[in-house]
Length: 263
Image 1 (cartoon, rainbow, N blue to C red):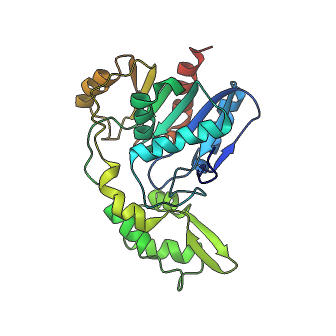
Image 2: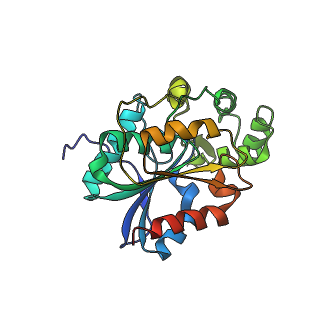
């Protein structure tokens, strides 16, 4: 393997079990899924909590597209000698999982896609990205101060707390952001890109939509089944886009039951 190849950071939660990679959404990180990974460990899965490029503790890069993020997963699997893996991808991570299914299906056994479809989405993140860009860490030296500054632009407390997980201590007394905010601002229009391939994936797949989310509409079910003829589509009740956090009990029940079909 080339010494120049950069490998994504991950936390691997067990030393045995069926290999399952979790790919977080935009502005997230693998750590957001620790509770869910602990449940999967107990039912026989070795979970890889991945930080995708420009997120978490993974490397930063000017390149940012679904094809290069899929390539990152290929390199990760080569490095860890993984094959016939399960992938769960949420939002942006779901698009990466679909990219892999379309172009590198030999790597996968089955996929779970959480609250995203292959269609195009209009950009939704300008306000969030602008808010994070306004955090001047020459002046802000506490999480409380960052929260106060961010609240001017982002009033929703739960969203703010999710975003503030990206803060870390660069050194004593100096905060920074784990996300590569400048690159992500430039790439914002690519996050909603349609995955427009003239292919159909025969992989088993489960698409989950949040009952209160507008990311997977009834009108999306035809395009999902066109790309993924074996797709099962299920709804997580009382949940929006962050369905695994908003209704973890049902999310765990539905995904565990589906995974159990593979023995």
